[in-house]
Image (cartoon, one colour):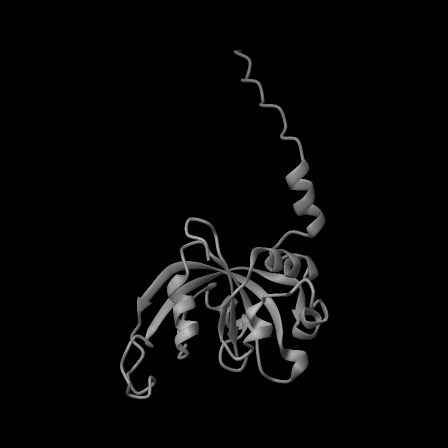
Length: 179
């Protein structure tokens, strides 16, 4: 991804191991670790503060595979305290992590089948090219399209977001009159 600009990612998790509900009930901040694949690890090492990530539930059948929320990177790559036995005793940098904070739930979860149905708009999306990777980059245009498909994310409605972007700020208030 381009240095100096916000990048976008997709983080996969098995809901039985760590779900969106777990993320939210955890105060919204968690350590994203347990990634073993070298390519996925390299993606995590590329993450920068403020990068946005789709929170994707994998496994559990086709209907469970979907983007359910958005998190933000709040701590870049660091070595975590995952025991060497987790890494299969091979050492190396597989014990790394990033910390992420919840930004909001998708207003409508976006299922994998919906993403696949938009093949032309999703060209180049690693989720479709390398479906087994647990961390993949998301091109900006694809990020925007998926956000649109899901009606956005967060606490406000899509209409409220648009109104806030186009609203004219009120005039400054005048100082109180002297009494």
